[in-house]
Length: 142
Image 1 (tube, one colour):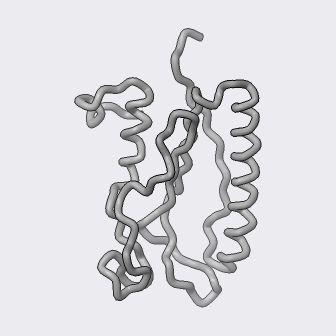
Image 2: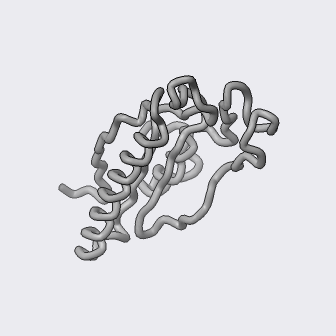
C-alpha cells in the first residue's frame, strides 16, 4: 500500500459498571489481558513486535467511591495506556494521587479524581510515532 503506518481499531466495551464493579471489572480486564497477551506473543513470533504500538483508551473515568449498587459512576480521571516493542514503558505519565480519598488534594466528592494531564495528551507520542514533528502537533488531527 505504500504506507509506513496503519491504524486498526478494536472496540471492547461493557466497562460501564454502575453496579457490581469489582466482579465485572475483574472478568473484563482478564479477557482484555488474555487478548493483548495473545496478540503480543503472535507479533513477537512473527518478528513484528517492534513495529507495533497499542493504545488503549477509555471514553470516561470512574469514581473511586462505591455507589449504592456496589458500582461506580462516571468521573474525570480515566485509564489509558500505550504499549509496544519500541515504547519506553513502565512509567506513569502525569501525577498519581498521593492520597486516594476525598481528603486528598486530587480528589473531590464523590470520589472524582482530578486528572493532572489532559486525556488527549496520550496522542502526542502517537503523533510523533507517525512522524509528525513537535512544532506541528497542535495543528494536526489524528
